[in-house]
Image 1 (tube, one colour):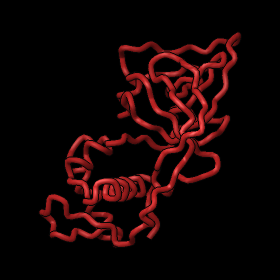
Image 2 (spheres, rainbow, N blue to C red; image 1 turned 45 degrees about the horizontal axis):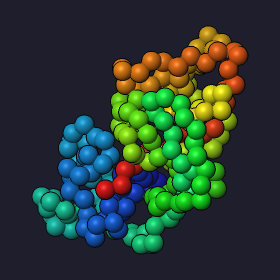
Image 3 (cartoon, rainbow, N blue to C red; image 1 turned 60 degrees about the horizontal axis):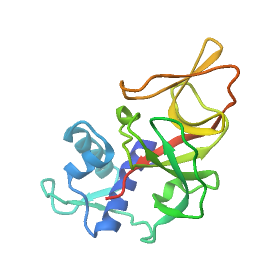
Image 4 (cartoon, rainbow, N blue to C red; image 1 turned 135 degrees about the horizontal axis):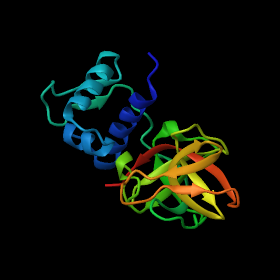
Length: 200
């Protein structure tokens, strides 16, 4: 059975945590790591993925670390280039370097890259200071998508909102103002957010 994008993200989190720590995550750790608001959401995903054969509750339904992937992916983690820091508060330059970072296998693609977030203006979307984001390189985005935008040569991470012939870049923290892109600004979209994660 084909998985939804969110189900694949859930499985990738379980796999990545298990490889890194040698044991499956608890439901509480999944809730925190995935940014869910309640354990009920975790139970919903576990039930759905167990039903279609992708997860196994090897210690029974009440085991603290009962989850196991039924089809193990290769243990060696996949990697994408880490191109530097991007501010989620005020625009800064994204610094290019030759580093790489482990990411879930489904996100490996020639057009994908990783940035580390600096700042807290996107906390409403569960993107915190120090998190990593996987970005698909593209010059186009749909309204409401989170984008890496370049404004006068500087990069920032915001929600893209084209409005009445101009562009607004919206933070997800009320302490930060909306960025208005004027006709005199040099503006382009450099990529759209696919996934965010943090290292433990």
